[in-house]
Image (cartoon, rainbow, N blue to C red; front, side, top):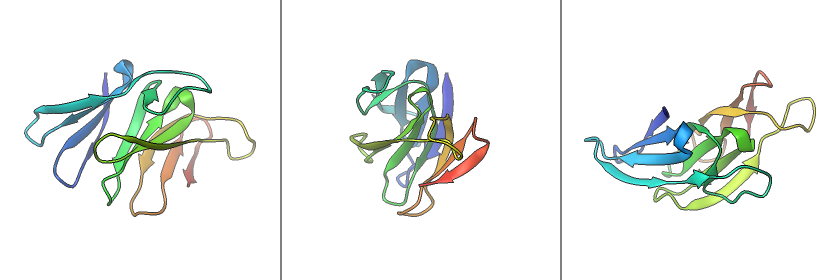
Length: 124
C-alpha cells in the first residue's frame, strides 16, 4: 500500500509502503534503487522496524524522517537509509502516546509532526 512520498535533492523518490512496513527508494526515472525496513511493533522494537510507516520527508541535509504510526514515534535515517535515531511522540495535554501521520523538516533544526488523535501539529 504505497502511502506517502518525498523527493530528495538528487531527484530520488522515497516512498512509505505502509502495509509492507518498509521504505522504498526509486530513481527519478522510477527504477527501484533500494528498500529498507521490516515489521516490528512494541516498546522495545529496534530502529529500522516499522508498524505502518506514514508521513515521510527529507531535510536539506538529505536526512529522511518517517512517521512510524503504530509505534507512536518518528524515525530518522541518513540519505543512505541508515538508522540514526528515533523518538516517541506524546499527547499535548498529557504524557500519552498518539499517532504521528505527517512530517515536514523545512530546515536543519525543527521537525513538525501532525498528530491524528491529538488534533494538532507538534514541533520538535
